View 1 (spheres, rainbow, N blue to C red):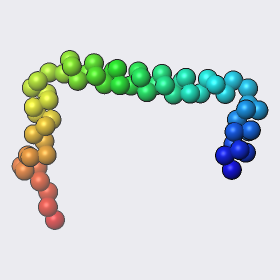
View 2: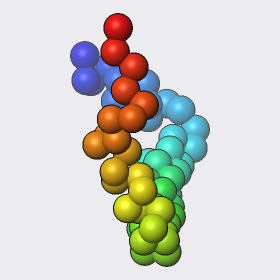
View 3: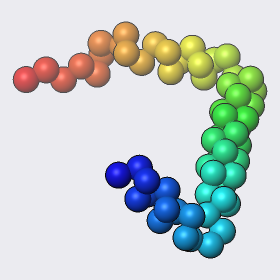
Length: 61
């Protein structure tokens, strides 16, 4: 099965671009996420972290 996939992928033109694009998307996502975490306001982080503990909006059936 793997041999069939490998031969099929080798017959495609410009197939080596896909891993590079995947790596770039992965890298850019984590750079942006790290930047957002570093620059987020502490009040916002505190508010969001307390949302699961907030029982005022708890709608039980």
